[in-house]
Image 1 (cartoon, helix red, strand yellow):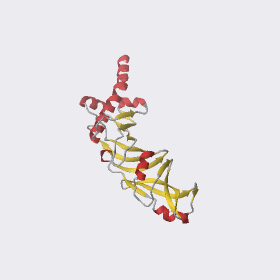
Image 2 (cartoon, rainbow, N blue to C red):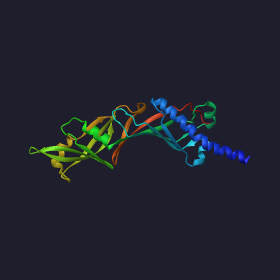
Image 3 (cartoon, rainbow, N blue to C red):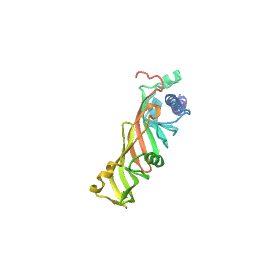
Image 4 (tube, one colour):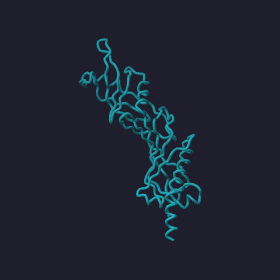
Length: 234
């Protein structure tokens, strides 16, 4: 009996994760209309809870194709904790969960893509380049002083407003020195720019943005994932 029990436990550890990951991958592919099956990695903490069908988190890695008006470097869905009806899933041939599976969208834009976005804007403040830092962005440009072009850098943050990425300037520097506010007030008013992100994967809408070194991370709620029939808790 002990040997049989051990075999069942080992079998569950071996079979259950790829089984559930396969169900999640196929359903995400169908919902988002993907040409290829995404990669799914599920975690159970502590590990023995996997035997009960309890998964603490997981990540769905999507192909980094064009999403809306941006070309992301990495795209993922971070899954919230969920419970699987193991017996019902195996018998029914489809993933059955105790409640709908939900997750958040994470879209990473490279510094090169952010530069493409910024330099594509048509305004009186032409952007020559963007340097992304932890928590801030430095946008390069030129202004005319006594008829001569002077390179300036405008530091600020980014946020998402009504489905658009917005650069919000905070200070101006020239020759490595921050300029006084009385000299930069009008300049700052013309340096903010907005870029419509468009519809993301599965019709989701981006709601937040975070500035990291060399990249911008966009976040949004994907909502419920149709991963099979949800069952009532016992």
